[in-house]
Length: 562
Image (cartoon, rainbow, N blue to C red; front, side):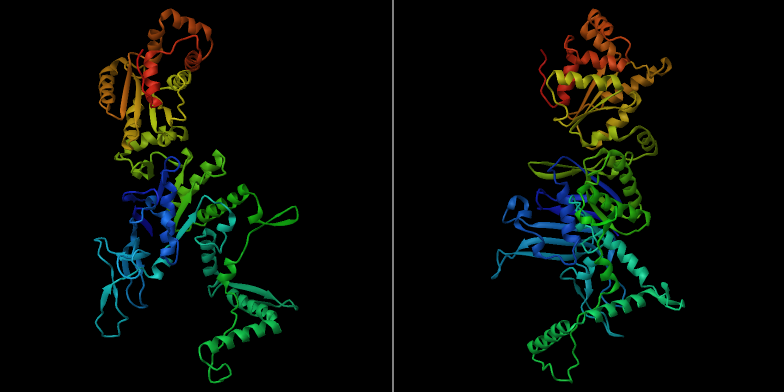
């Protein structure tokens, strides 16, 4: 089971209906306070509970606390949820769950908040459920479902790993705990009739017994040991007072009613477990360890889930990169991709290590403006050729462009190293502006990179050499056509700068030949890219006009030519 599509309206930063189409792996990226966490929170609020009531929300959750505003959430599943209303009868298919945090319009409760819950078909009409359990030979009677049955919510396998990595929220007894779900499977295995163990008595005789049977015997013995006089008196008093409350004589022997403390079953026992760490002979409750260690255990549980090849869960994860070095981030991302083969993962991230190209269709950009939270996905169609090119060329450093407010694409290292130095000399802070310069590994890659960034609606600049050494003399016609394709990308959001030959010659012309030679002599015996950076950082040489135009655009600052 997975979420196919979710639509949210009126929740916190979400002013207008926000619809997310979701696959197996979904990365939500965007600046702080854009609404990424709100999306995970609202999913957890309606799908991470056995029962959703009006108390799951408050006025603070309503967009700008507007008193007449509702919160609406619609979740479509693939495949539909199967609701087993009655045993022995085919399940009812429920494709959509709808939740509305609204107000009573009339009556004594007018103005008070309420929670409307619906099971809907894909055409928006209510799902039909049986009005009553049919008897043999009786015609079935159907009626619209008036709410979402508790059994439906209970069957949704949601796991929520929030930004709070305290281990207590991830132990077996915690709600939506991954460890709890793993122990559910352990418990099912434990209770198999063929799950046997060997007991050895004092004489050395071995006896095979069922593990569940043996556990129940041990628990019964433990409870018997606990049954002190005070324990029995408490149990007896509770029974007497309860029966009297019901108008039943506790001493009436014809009333076969017993109230007693029930021994633990195996699942309850598993869910009560705590994790401990033994170090140098000392036992420490893992919840008392530092945040980094607790996060490591949470990540270890996630990796255990992947290693055991569990399937069918839906994961909500906030910032999986927390507390992790880059190497560990890459390792965890591999784990998430493995988990995503048989489960659904929706996560927020600020790390380029948690987005992968060419799987750009997994990325959703989340942004907020005066109209509230919005989302953008790529409009670029995948082709095998494009996929192979992107798989070859992208890495975490280049992936940074998906987190940028503006991107400048350059052919090589010289421009990438020099332009930030010129920006600094112009007092332009590219990092604060959210700008990124991406070296694409050669002129032939510019178009593919540009098409991808444009498809996400990110403003992009392209700096290219008209006459590149990448193209041989026999390829000049092809280069002219390629140049035209780059120039054709110009729009309100796309700037294109063409250098007559290459960056070095453009710099030579801007500085004059004599000054350029002076600069080169000042920095001998270094590579072309390093020399370009050193010249750019040197206040002895002016900032060329063509460079100013580029860096001011990149910093989203108006440039007036002097």
